[in-house]
Image 1 (tube, one colour):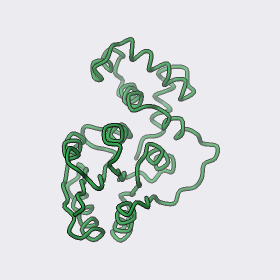
Image 2: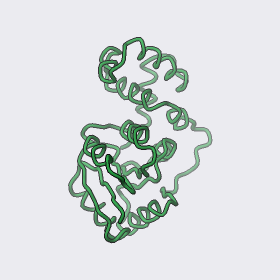
Image 3: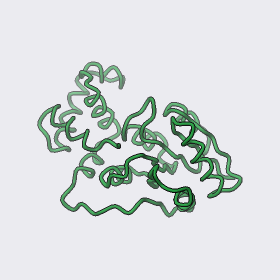
Image 4: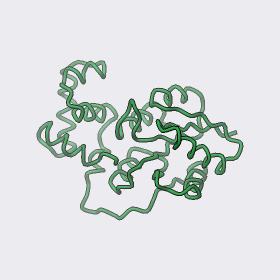
Length: 202
């Protein structure tokens, strides 16, 4: 029997996703979570699919996805987002998401997407190619730790605060920042934050 975890902080949308799961995988055991912490706790037991909202109370943007992929690389994760921006879709898939389901999708489309992802086929909305836009690729090249540091920068936190959050030294953060700036093609914190905010889901 499939075990599917639905992580979204809106009860109504969790109910919509559960309805889609019931149709895509009849008889599946569905566990609902309202935060990234609850989702991580749910993943301590085998899971066939995690439906992960990009905006949870304790996780913003791609940091939650990156953390899950780093800690549970074998778990298929389908991103669920209010954003349908092509760069957000490509970024999520670049980080290893098995699929991307827009919240605007009709129920039959959600059912189709969940069934496809459970079958191992993956699923994402059609997005225009952006040959000249390598920002998603640059952000996707960051390690999970570097992504968390970038999220800290976006939140306006100082190096020592980010170091405390991650349980590392301030020197480690500074070393990581050098790599982050190089990978993103920027020269300072301000440029990195501006670039990162371009990738924010709606």
